[in-house]
Picture (cartoon, rainbow, N blue to C red):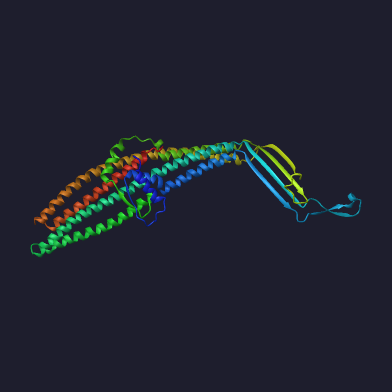
Length: 448
């Protein structure tokens, strides 16, 4: 399902157009929509996209070095003072004297054109392959940034939901407790109960109010964290359209455990393979430096000498010259420098082979650990779900008994604390299931 047209337009208005930063806009997001926005707008993704474009331009740059290179030059000289040279007078029939002579003209101009073409270079051919491989590696790193930001945004989305759920539980409990406190106050004022009963309830109300204030602060921080990773302005009002229970059903954690894991498809392993390819190409490049390189050139030059400034006179003479040729650079002896570089490159290849084994084993261990943590999370989730239902029943019954005078404030407080604790454990267990599920998704994902 694609992001709706309304959401696209709204995101465009928020992120691209000239809305003032203080203008508060409201955006409703499902988890899928949040991931899609992050995949386009997150800072890390945009930076990786810039890296891909840089690598693409580097390929073009390197390709151009093997294509014809054409340069033109134009020069103009105004000889304010021509140099003077002494010539023996014998040449002019004045033996024994030095004659002062000035050579040249007051004005001179020249224009030239040069063309150079690389014919063969082993390092160029290998370098071109390396540049394309680097581009492919940059593209894989962009995909990794998308995988990572989806995981980060998902965790931030879950945290907001968990905090909201905690506030909802505190609110409902606070309403019940305030009601009981009000009723107990009336009973106390009529002399039908002790002041301690009322004080205990007031203490519970105060604690709940403090818990709510803390939770609201945590919610504000969690929302800001989510908006940051979505690339949305801080003034944006976010409405999350899904609940934790819906997301657990949607992500199907149990089904994730049944999926097979191929380390070779993992994005980290794929990036390592590209790095290994680059190491092989560097080894080939160092070996190619033993080969000669061949290039051709063509130069054309024309110049004019003028006593008067009349360079655009069609009758004026220009004296041209041209030359073409082939250059061959043959490496003969480098005192072991090239051999040392080849050996260094071979060591780097061996290191990438070791890293391949290491990363492959590490990914398998990560998958086993993630599967184990997800199983434990699901087991804990099931237990806490049952406990919260039981504690809710106990708290409700104890509240009724307290109203009827069949239970004291201590019994109510114990049931109240037990209920809040079980609810907190259930929310934590739900959050853990979601986080473990998205971690497993990231390992299993094979982005195209």
